[in-house]
Length: 279
Image 1 (cartoon, rainbow, N blue to C red):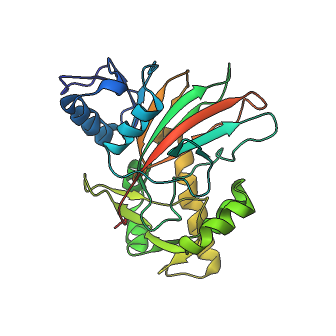
Image 2: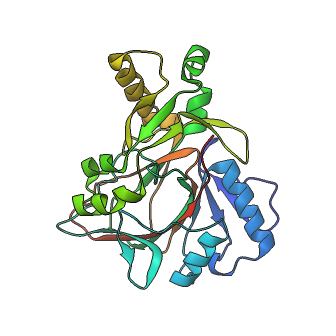
């Protein structure tokens, strides 16, 4: 089924609430009207997929990201030497990034990511899919009593937690002076749509602030909220192909890179758009 309401793009939803493939678009040559429709589709579907973007150069990739806002520079992930805005996510026979868990990008920052634009350069013959979870629908489905309990609660996030997920100690030590622990609202409001979501990241959370309960209750709540992304009804899944591009909204989703292809080689390139302070 193709979604209606677009003149310049064709949008085919993957599920009712999250994910859509966009057809008939060359991301290296998108005019203003087509970009506006892409932006609108992103707010509706939360993650968009574009295949066969072989005409998108690295400079074009960076320029596309900038259309969504200011770009972030990698702090704890390798960057391309000639393009410092470009995150390089590379799996080799002796190294695999530990992104095979549900997470959100850059929540150790006071202004975490708004949008990510990820391009597949080299993909394995089989495996290596990525999944996204709709954390707005997860919030909507919470019992009203739980929503009331979580109102005003904040997550405490630290870059040091990334050591548990394969980030080197040297990279973390280099980043720590610029990124002290930061608190974010556990239930955040999307600045463009007004919808609310569960905003939590297992890669950076070290506790809760403002939670009415003891240590055991706090840990139980964190565990239960982290598990929400594992619900299949909140998910969409994308099988990568060379030069496929995914654009997703970090403000209302989590994602999971499936590590079922090691030791095959995989290279992905990403630009990330800076967001604003969550509220």
